[in-house]
Image (cartoon, rainbow, N blue to C red; front, side):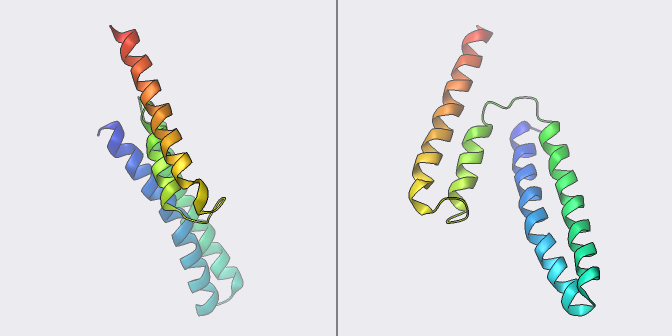
Amino acid sequence: MSDGRRSCLGFVFLLAALALAAVFGIGGWVGRDFRTGAILGIGAFAFFAALSAYMFITIKDYAWLPAVFGGLYALLPDLIAGPSDDIVVLILGAVISGIWSWRKSKRAV
């Protein structure tokens, strides 16, 4: 599997860990009680977070990761610091990724 695919799956599993933990937690709480919801939520988070960590650990080339993370940050509006900083983070991630890739290709020659 390519590094690009691993990173995308890593981010998908990370988002699934956050979203499904809340869904399973609330579902278990409504269906049974708070303890059941907490156990289901923590279990779902642990499973998907472990899958995400595995995907990120097996990546061999991290040069493009800042651009992917910058794009992900731009897609999560108002979650961290509001919508005004999204374009800055997206551009900064792409610039860091470009410089990192350029330096790596420069060393390879």
